[in-house]
Image 1 (tube, rainbow, N blue to C red):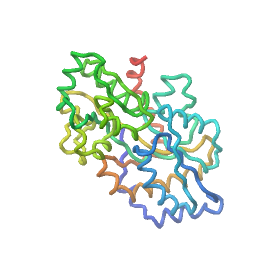
Image 2 (cartoon, one colour):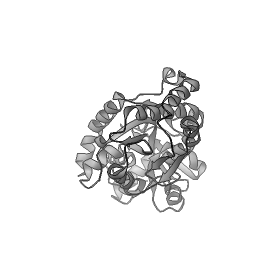
Image 3 (cartoon, rainbow, N blue to C red):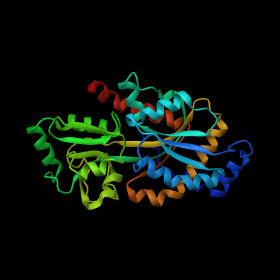
Image 4 (cartoon, rainbow, N blue to C red):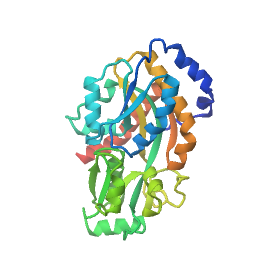
Length: 316
């Protein structure tokens, strides 16, 4: 289910939000906040955090230090965070759906459970896209499907993490097209441009932002959105090509379980205002802005858990 950033949500003025933040500032925050990105620099989570960083610092009145702890498609940082972070609001971490849904289901040693965080908000989403190098022999999605049917497992597609949005939608594509592909997990989106340009993989199942970023160095064969993405107007949707695949990633931020509600609210308000200010920068990159908080978070996680459950079971 979608919970788009509504006109009402963004109509709250910066002054109102600043006042709300200021009301609790005597107690929180009083020192720098560490904002952990569990992926490599250069990916969607990192790009967004860099946009957010100066705005959050202005609103909260303290330094917000973006750090990177990649590994395991986010699982390394999420496990460390769950086990070690104090519930005081001074350490927060980026969280992604479906990563946080799929990994605990698929791996008993994932090291974290989604229920063990206070998710502050989900602030944007990005549709998946199947992207190949500009010099690829696959000029259309049909070209890739035809070759994959004749050469099982020969087509290698990279993506960010295992049982991530990239991986799960590639598995859906395999089922829909009745083909057998080989998925190559990377620690984040950051390494994918080099993998594409070096022809280390036949293509990637990644996000629309990568197609925009790499421009004429790549060819976007299909996008997993309900409608064509404005930043990639020439790229057809999977639905247009006969495949029922609409999916991607939700990105947000979490605090440790037990973080006081007033701190979670303060952070949610700051992220909402940051989101409002960076919309014009992010939408042309292929992002869809969201504002998901409170009970809506549980609803989205529950809905997407049901959607991805059969795929995860089939992948065992």
